[in-house]
Image 1 (cartoon, protein in one colour):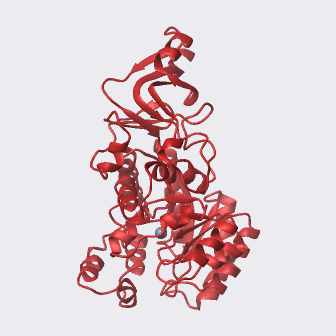
Image 2 (cartoon, protein in one colour):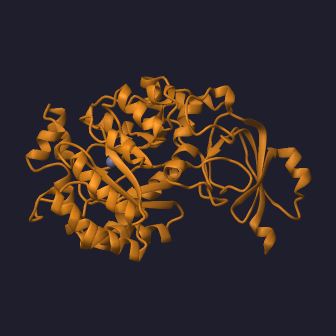
Length: 415
Ligand SMILES: [Zn+2]
């Protein structure tokens, strides 16, 4: 019985452990530990040793550790982590996209009744069963692309009943699916059109009627808010985040996407992560770095909107922590492929392979407060992604075209 839970996998052409690298600042490829002809011993889904395959085969005999032989060239990385998505929704926004490529701005489309509000309506109307099926389909697709941990925001419910329904669906899919899902409440995405009050009274309503219930049902430990001219001001956000913190939530923020709003508040409050940052300049980056706020770049929404990329190079050069996530959502970022987007960000922002891999593994794990993953190291979860090549540089070079050929979650091979 125990034998079935102990195994040795390999040999791999290269194992990039990404272990013992700093959480902040620049990373040269030479700093990465690369184990050639590597193997991994594991027990009950947890890594027990990482080393040369032959060395491990001697140390962990076949009668104790089942062999899972790998044929051909494979480069192994830790399972990828997408630290910012909006996957729980129904309906398409192809109409918005057609307007945008015809030259109409995101904010103008929102003013005309498209945008987030359109998705709120279609998601509210969808049955829980269908929402669950849609979410499972999206999560499964990510898993086949090597993403073993996924943050998922609510934020298309925008009233207590619907937000709780959507967070329950995320929790349900997390229970049923192999991938690990991290829920975040983004009820402060936008004041819904049917709320009888202003931004402040809407946020007050969330604090009184929604957040305590999320705590009570253990539906999320993270709270997000969209700080932007079209959503919430810094002052409104400050009050909301202060209350959410008092209730014990981790705080994250959509900041500096279209206007320099949010990052200074994120720094002032020392929140966990500030995401987007497309229009952040030096003062914003410096402020975030000084307060240790994780900076999450979302190249998918830059690609979807034809917008500038977050200043990822400057963020790293300022010795801040750079995470790269997809922001996958039906409006601004429908494409959703983490590896493709991270590769594209690398070419525009001049990021090293090590900086990109860090941003989608252990640095992303830090943004989700998950110290048990993101590196291939003794004691960590046996979550891995294998690419069919002998040279890790091929992975970003192929810009997402070379997908993973092997994926393990908790030591079980899925692909
Ligand atoms: Zn987002």
